[in-house]
Image (cartoon, rainbow, N blue to C red; front, side):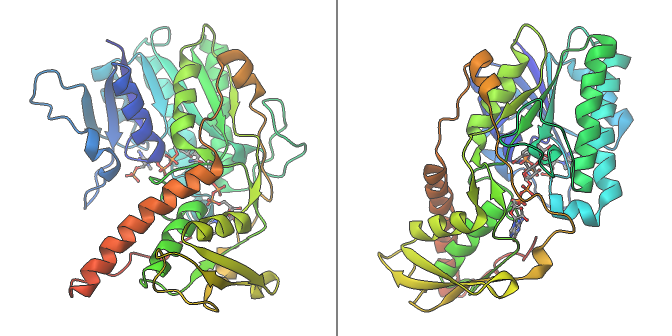
Length: 373
Ligand code: NDP
Ligand code: GDR
């Protein structure tokens, strides 16, 4: 039975990857952080009682900033495959916590590679690094391929640049099977609530149910290549099954604006939007409401306003990936289209919002958690 070790197992990708590897028959070990409240919601459905015979999913406390902890877990598990998905993954937050972001995202990768080397596992353990389209930053050519030059635009992207190159370096220096997946944005109903897609689907679902009045957004003109996380974790695994290690772009090859995402998410709730004004004065107003998904919304309601607080000190204006190499060498193609993914995200957030609204009607109102980035 193959063994995998996943950092960031409690995150969006970690949860889909753990599911995928368990289905493939792997024994899966994940590193979770100690937190003062539960942080395993995304993997609770695949929890297995370690006391039961045949359990194949195990969680270990750990942190990418803690060398001895990572080395000890690596020594205990001796994994065939390591997937380094753990990160402070929010670009805007990285401007506020640049040093922490570098410690986790850059040095965390080094610590894992060194643990593999220190334990003499460099020929036994394959390593996947969660690299990112943010490396391209100020893009020099479009679409971006594995050969497009990098120009990172945030402390997050600069830290990930180090992680990218240290994986390449350990491959060249020590013959390690280390791969970079240069993944473009990928989303799902499990996406963190402060990334733009989830912020929109969750915010609009809350507005539809009368739990919030208005969504406050940053740069609506940003262009992204959005895919589904479920499709992208399949590619993370495929990379480590090859005869030789390499780096791959993972993307859909389609690009849309944040504004367009808003329009399509609203349409899933039966809301037609009209955008008025420009720049920081731009708003989205409801033109018509159809169906019964948004009982709290009336035509004329302003459901989105721009708040410059969400602009970034340096923005990545446009990203569009060319995943031809992944397709030609590994036969990978994304299976879920953007409209289908938006429908899935809105449906999930609407169910959550209806639950909140029901509690509120019975005097058990819980505030809708936090504004953010
Ligand atoms: P998430 O933010 O959903 O998950 C990040 C995970 O890392 C969480 O499990 C988090 O734990 C964990 N983590 C954070 N800090 C530490 C730390 N100090 N030590 C150990 N674990 C830590 O990210 P995604 O699942 O979306 O992304 C997975 C990886 O892929 C990340 O490295 C991200 O940067 C990268 N990436 C993501 C893309 C995307 O569009 N989603 C695109 C390209 C790259 P906790 O749950 O406790 O917070
Ligand atoms: P990104 O994702 O920065 O691309 O990083 P995010 O969803 O945060 O932003 C995408 C674009 O939308 C614009 N935007 C807003 N973003 C947020 N979060 N909140 C807003 O209110 C808002 N308004 C407009 C942003 O300015 C940006 O242009 C994600 C992360 O998952 C990284 O870890 C990963 O490496 C990259 O994708 C690929």
